[in-house]
Length: 467
Image 1 (tube, rainbow, N blue to C red):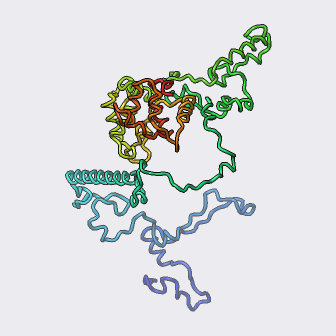
Image 2: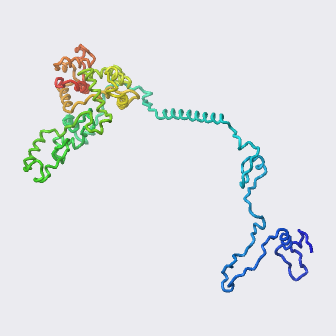
Image 3: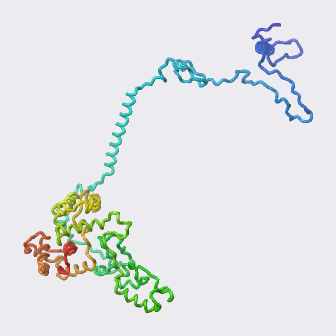
């Protein structure tokens, strides 16, 4: 009996229609037989009987020969899986050496792409050079933008539209607003001479900070007789005011002063009365070896101070102030370059004494109001040695003894009290009248100017003659 491949009989559709059964509706016996005859294997694996020992006792027991071999429905319908990518022909043609399928490399073809570079060595070098030049140009532009963003402007909108009057021509307001807030809160203002008598607040500016005692509340209180009783401290027997020792707390047998401890301590206390507990070590050079190689502001000022005394003599700071005012404007501001020229050329300050970097940093710190200009008064106040508090008090007493009128005294009566003709000529030259003191005899001198003049003369002159 033969059946066509696509007939109903081939798929068991009409077999035994007249019989009592409905026919075989599973499997495809004709196709199975053809496949088995052709290749020895059909679409489905023929079932075989597996012997199982003890089946009735244990249904979960696995057979000794392993599980039953079954067929895979996907493999039976679609065939074995192959790791092959589905690539359209438009990608396959001209694919070059690329592995477009992903399973194996493709042999080299005549396609140039992939084997021959599209750019030569010259083009690659030129492109790298253009990239470096562009990067350098962008960095220069960014540096300029950052410099403009960090530029410091000393002009204000008010100062640009309105002109500020000169300090030399400014006058005190005629109608002052009087307020007594401080008097109501703290009482009447104390005499300023009380503070000038306190040695605890003395700050020598030309002393290295490692050799200087800091002005503290305790030091100020110990120097004031009215506040000394409020401080709890022992006798100052060390190198500074709060230097302590333990001789007065040791037992009699351990006291190193002697067997009569009370008598020895009394002798020690009597000797401490003659010493000055507020003394400082002094010197612009540090005493500690760790600070010797570090540049200090005190050493810089000391070198300039010594050079002023050697070149210009006793009136050194007066001459320096005049040279600086010759280069300044009406308000007393002088450029930083002009100050360097005065110190290097006229004062003959060599770089061996004071380095260029140290001097530039020092002058830059004094520039506060303008971009590259500093005030002559600020430079002089910082450079010269300050007057001790006791001497400052004597200067104020001398000014008050000259009987000031409206806060100023005449220069003539003070010049008549000075016996040294050299000092009289120096003071006359300081006010711009060399050799003719009669020109400045009626010039009014305020307390601030009087104090500044004596501060300029004090480093190299004897103030006892002037006071």
